[in-house]
Image 1 (tube, rainbow, N blue to C red):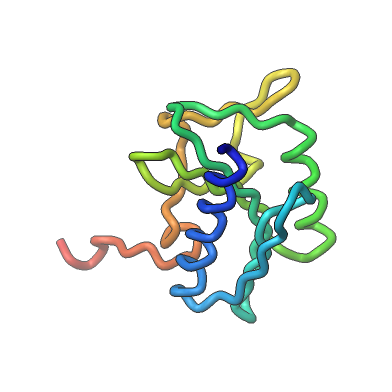
Image 2: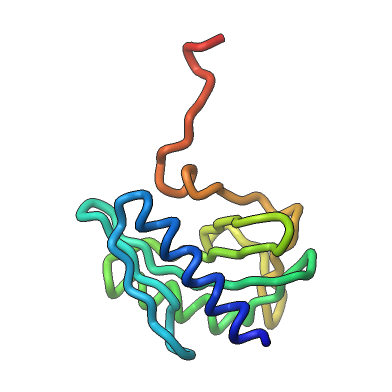
Length: 128
């Protein structure tokens, strides 16, 4: 069941990124990363997680693999978490706190929206 939910979340994120003008490659199975996305200007290396829980623990070595791959590839490492019944949240690995063995992400962890991640977040500057 977890594999299907994870694969479904990956496919959903592929469609979202494609709708924003990105070409996306999905790496099925357990590899270093789940998605590679690019639009000719920006490249993202994405690890996708989906959870029904209010918190998620990621092994430190998984995050290190993502950061290492992104560095070699020339992309930006991104953790994309779909909290079921809440929605998508995006995190830069360098902003996460970790313990001895894992990173913890919960609903209180500061995050970016997809538009914020892509630098398309609208602001009210100049409107008010």
